[in-house]
Image 1 (cartoon, rainbow, N blue to C red):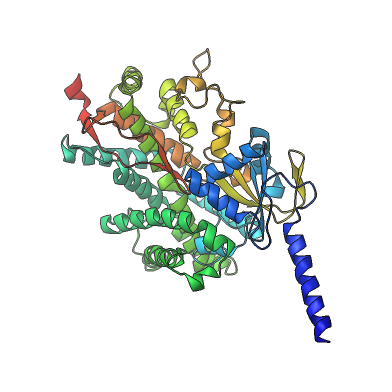
Image 2 (cartoon, rainbow, N blue to C red; image 1 turned 30 degrees about the horizontal axis):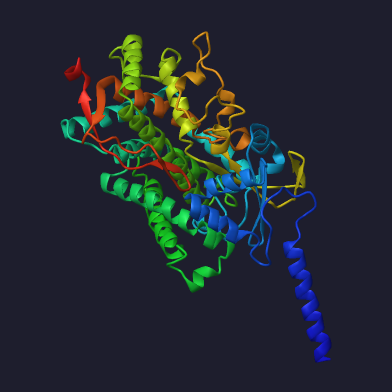
Length: 488
């Protein structure tokens, strides 16, 4: 009897091992799988070798000569897509609107599958629509938003003047301005300076922590019990608790009517009285976190890369300044000026191509068996989108490794080729904050260059190489901001 049971166990184990290494029919090409781990070790090795997961996937795709890379990470089937046709398909077709439901994703959402970024189905549809509508009702995407951005521009100018020609690292200054503008619509007020510094610190640490923990906690959540510190779990949990505390504090102020005016939190609290099933305080907290994460570092990183590029190329800086000076002079910039400042607009587009802030977008969960580029992609598979590969695809871009704003200007002097640039995604999951991000980047950038010449602070050019994590960021640098009236 024991021998029979043992034989059955062995057969079951053998069947499991066989199935775990057998790829689905017509699955995209990629590394071979080993039992239990799939090709996780291969992915970890290339990630370590090339310095980021995006670059590792990119090199594997080249190795297998494919725009659709098939992987198995632990027990999870993963497909990484590149190529404009494939990426547009994933962005726009309903089969790819899902989000994975994993421990790692729930950890990102404060321990619950809530919010609007990493949910799908009825909850996502209802709350995305509600969030977009209510933000618009309180001025998001309208003229009043431009006024808020212009106010932040004045605050930035004030910060630069306080330093009186001393070297400045623009990182916190830019990130603070983005956060204050965004939080004004979410919570009706600016964040107190001490809380703002803490929030920016937490979001920065969070990005690093999730980059570190991605391979460990995503594939083997149980490792948090064996190595809570090494896996990054303790750090992420601590950061989540502190972020929750900041958001909860804002919600409590609204409950006590200590915030004047109207804003998203007030709208959500009112809706909670009508719809108590899906409109909960935990959902409100997670949506607020989604807004903070989506709009903070990504927008300020574009501006940082823009200022770094001008610091490294004075001729380019003077060309942009001359266009600004000739078109608007000393007028406060607004979004409508982007039609007159064609080269400046093209420069900012090239920044978002060349320094793709989200090199690996997603993840998406496949809702039904489907096909990409002739390969079969099973239901429940996770799909990642190699945006940086697309933005450097020589089939689309001439000399993609060259930084060249002219690629976005046609012979008539108008912008072109923007249909292949996806800094905010595409389709129904397109970033709902793109109106704020585009206006903020343009107005702040033009306002700084209009008033200041950006010069080296120590005679040494800072590196232009991005630092890749969940998002790409410039290496920290300092510059002197010299008032233009001193340089004329």
